[in-house]
Structure formats: structure tokens, C-alpha cells
Image (cartoon, rainbow, N blue to C red; front, side):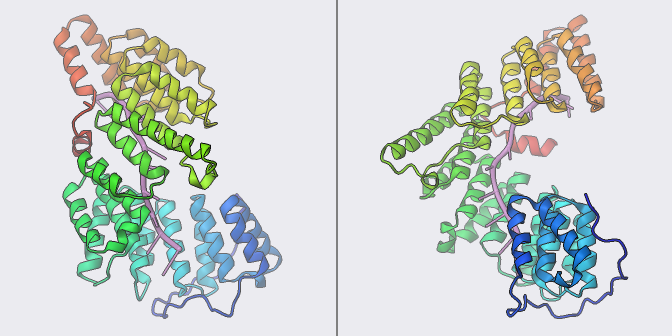
Length: 427
DNA sequence: GACTTCTCGT
């Protein structure tokens, strides 16, 4: 990636400037409109165009161009370029512009630099709900959901900032991440007091997902039924919810219902893209997961094929992983192995570990050794892999079914009970 | 300006 800044003036430090919005009279220039449009289609181009601009015509660089370039860095998680853009923001005196500040926070969150996010936040003189939400979201994005919820509470109690829909959405995803059902329920209570909030689909999807991840499938179904206009994410969350709770038939029934609805809409000639809920790659992960948990190998293969042939979705590593999991759970280790070898993309460590784990459960020494050597090749071998293999040898040799049985019981998450809370507590 | 769906070993 091209570096667009070489020698920067020392940043001046001023934290007391009042925040301002973009000057209304300053309309985005044509070049800024290009920067903005590339942001959507090809953020790298935004950065390249910006660096060009900086080289050829520095005077054309204004707060808008910087805003877009910061956003581009966030989208592409480019830490170095992002920092350079930040330095330029300071140099050009755009620090008080609150839109730029929140975009910078966003960029640091995307580049996993949470302390930089927090530092920026601290420097903002009059923090509104958007700044708070950016901060909370940064913690959630970087797997610090506990801290995120603390800050969410702090925002309300110490600073009297009322959460809006988006703040609640982010807080709910923190609850989902932690499996914190009680917290999620109390947020649900707060949301219920604002009837207009139930019209916000993102918020309702986050609520649904929270109940799914916290193991309350009944509440999740209630939320699902109460969402009048659903989107693909709504359906995906519910399908995944059923799958996670061992209700494979429910999950697949839901998927069929969605397909049926799409078909009938197409027949009625209302088949335009925006009126159909076309299953996407994430939804198929839910579908394959359901098959896997129910041991429905043939169905899983059928869905996998239909994903490719009917929906034109190119399977990703995740989908291949689901298929490997599906085969491994049923003990079809050899088939899983040849499936992996036939994959058009390079299998990752997780896939080999799935096979390794299953080889342990089913006592297949050869495939365990093969998987393990692949893991070595991938340079991703963990201590746990040695343990897994030695367990296999021990189990094969002198120990008895007891051990095998115990392995089987503890190595599998049992569908049908809340796998979430168990998983979270012991991770 | 900030937001929601993504399985898999120990």
C-alpha cells in the first residue's frame, strides 16, 4: 500500500476546541464525490486517489476528503494509513469536527487499537450518544464485551446520555457475545417502553440474536414472530437459533418456508430483488449447521449443492468447514478426508482440527496422524493437538471404552440444551 | 457519524 504521507509537522495538541459540524457552505467538491463513491465499491481506490491528490494538489484536500480516506482505512483495516490520515487531520486542524472524530474512532476500532479509540473519545469535549456508541462498539468488536457493557451503563448513569436505537443494538450484541441473558432482558425492558423502537429492524434483529445466543429459544421465537417485516438476517438468526438448540427440523422447516414464500412471490410477479428474501451465504451456514447437529448427511449434501447450483453462492471456507463437521460427526472420516483434499481452496487449521478431533473420538489413528501433519504444515499446531493425538494412542492401546465414552460425551456440544452459556463460561 | 445474521477440537 502506498504511503501518502512522508514528513508531517508535529501535531499540535489542543483538546479544548469546541466541536463543530461540517461548514454548511462548504459543499463537497467533485473529487470528494469520487472519493465517496469509491468508498462503497473499492475503498483502496479512495486511498490511492487521495494520495494522488495529496501529491499533486494539496489545496484540494479538505475535511471531506479526509473523512472519506479515514473511512476507507477503517473499511480495509489499514492501521498505518489510518494513523497517517489521523496525523493529517491534526495537522490541518480538523480535529474539532466531530464526524471526523467518530470516523477515526471507527478506524482504530477496525485496526484493533482500542486504546487509541478510548484516547480519542476522552479528548472529545462534548460527547454525544454517537461518540459513546462508537466507543462501546469498539469494545464489542474487539471481544471486550464486558467492558462494553460497563461503559454502556456509565454512559447512562454518570453522564445522563440516553441510549438511542443504535446504542441499544450495540449493547444487545455485547449481551449476545457474553451470553448475558439477564442484562439482555433488562435492555429488552427498556426498549419496550419506546414503541417506536420496535419498528427498528436492526434493533429487533439484535434482540432476536441476543435471545438466540443466550439460549432462550422461546423468547427468540416470540421476538421473531413479532417482527412484521423481516429481512434475511432475521430469518438467519432464527434458523441458527434452532440449529444451535438441536431443533434441526424447525430450522429446516423455516428455511423451506422462506423458499416457498419467495417462490409464491415470484409467481405473483412480485419477484423483484427487494421483495424477495434470497438466502445468502450466512443463512446456508445455519442450514448446514442444522443438518450437522441432526446428523442429516444426505440433506446437508443436498443443501450444499443447492446453495451452489440454485443460488449461485460460491462456498467459502466456512461452508466447507460445515460439511467437514457434518461428515465427521457421523464418523464418515474417510469421506471427510477426501472431501478436504478435493476442496478448491486451501483448508485452514480449523478444518484439520475438526478432522483431528473426530479421529480422536472415533479412534482413527491414521487420519489423526494425517490431520496432525497437515496442521504442522500450516504452522498452526497447538499444544492441544499433541494432547489429542496422545489421547488417541492411549485410548487405542490400553484404556477402555470408558475413556472413549467420556471423550464422546465431553468433546461434543450436546444439541438440545443451551450450548451457549456452557461454552461461554468455560472458554 | 455510531448498529444486527457466520458452524467446527482441546
